[in-house]
Length: 422
Image 1 (cartoon, rainbow, N blue to C red):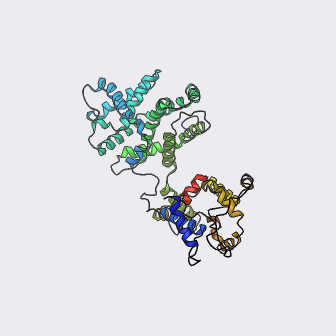
Image 2: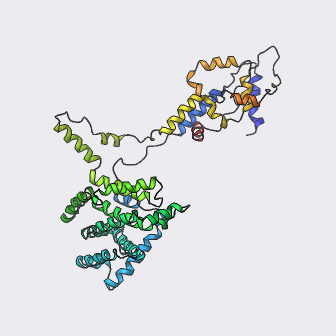
Image 3: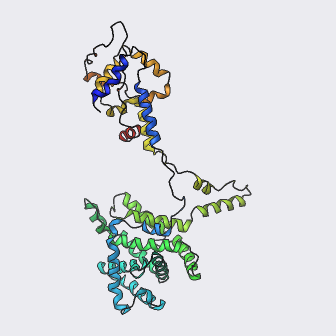
C-alpha cells in the first residue's frame, strides 16, 4: 500500500464537515493489540503431565542427530570383537552361559591402558545395551534384548567398572585444559564421556522401569541397584553427587567439553529412581498426615494438575524487571519501533493537543496503548524547529484537529514489540 493511498481516508474525514468522527491513534492501536492477543490463542497441548514419557521416547531423547553415524560404528566394533568368540553364531543364538563368558571378556578389556582399545570395547558394550538392533526385526525385539542385556551387564558388575572409568575421565586434567583452550568444542572432544554416559543412562532407565514380564531375579536386582545408587559409591558420596560435580565444573567453564544433556538426563533418572516421583510423593504425604493424625487430603494435587489445561510458563525474573523498567520510562522504550520523530515533536507542540488529551484521561487503562510517547529532551535539542504546519483544508475560522498518531494501523504487533525491547 502506497502512502498516497493511506492518506485518502484522512482527507475525506476532514472534508465531511465533522460528520464522521476522526479515528484516534490509541483506538487503532487498541484494536491491533486485541488482534495480537487473539492470535496468541492456541489449542490445548497434547502431553501427559508425569515424571517420564514412554520408554521408547525416553531412550530416543538421549541421542542427537549428530550421533546417528555412531550407531553403525558401535555395531562394527561389536561384530569385530564378537566374531572371534561366536564362530559364526549371532548374539541372540548364544545360551546364557556363553553370553556371560563374553561379557566377562569385555570387562577385562576395559582395564587395558590403551585408550583407543578401551573406547572400542565401550562401544561394543553400548551396542549390547542398545539391544543388538542389527539382529532384530521389530522395535519390540530391540527393547526385549536391550532389557535382557542390561540386566546381564549389571549382574556381571559392569556399572562399577563404568563408574571408575567415568571418574577417571572427569579427573582428566589434560582433556579439560585442552578443551578450555579450544575456540569451539566438537563431538570428538567428548567421545569417551558420551559413550560411558549413554551406557549408564540405558542401565538406569531400563532397570528403573517395571514391566509385567519381569523375572523374580530382575525385581531383586532392581531393589539392589536402587540401594546401590543411593549409597556412597565414589569417594564416600552417592552417584548423584558425582553428576552434580560435573554440572558444577561445566558451569564454571573448567570443563566445557562435558556433554551436559546426557549428564542432566542421567542425573534426573538417578534422582527419580532413588527418591521416587509424583506417586511416591503423594504416598509420603498420605502416610505423613496419618502419622500426625491429620485429616486426609481433599484431593490429589497431581491428578488436578494433569487435568488442567496447558498454559505458558510464567514470566522469568528478567522479564518482570524489564516490564517494571518500561513502566517507569513510560512509552519511551517503544520509540525505536515508531520512526516518526518529527511528527511526535509536532504533536508535543500542537496547541490543540489538550482537547485530545482530555479524551485520553477518560480512559486511563489505555495510557500504555498509545503509539506516540513523550519526547525526550535530547530529541527536542536535535530538532530545533518544528516542521511547517500543513495547509489548512477548511476556513481559518474553524478549528482543525490534526491527527495525533499515524493514519494507518501499525504493522508491528504488541507481542513482537515486547520481544524486540527485551
